Length: 105
Figure (spheres, rainbow, N blue to C red):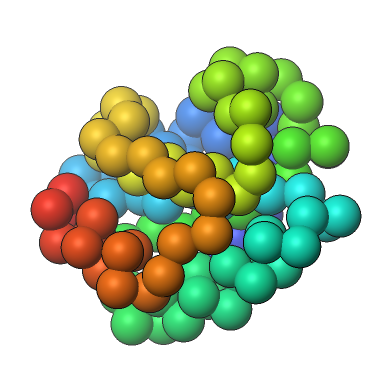
């Protein structure tokens, strides 16, 4: 499953849809660690089709970054039914993401 970019207008509907786990990658185009995390997130999206993966550009969606108190990028939010069930800040490994997904499925 491809990673979809979300805007403020699509965000609530996307993260509240169904019982599935949702992973939101808050990133910035100028952020080195964000660029390093992108292939990991894309790989995880292919490995876990049951999980919905989204990206939010904090420079384009300032209101969303503020709403979720994203102070550093990359920030990954793991959500179910619109509620945050896990969070990681900074560059994380594929194994760390696997663990977080396994805990929150």
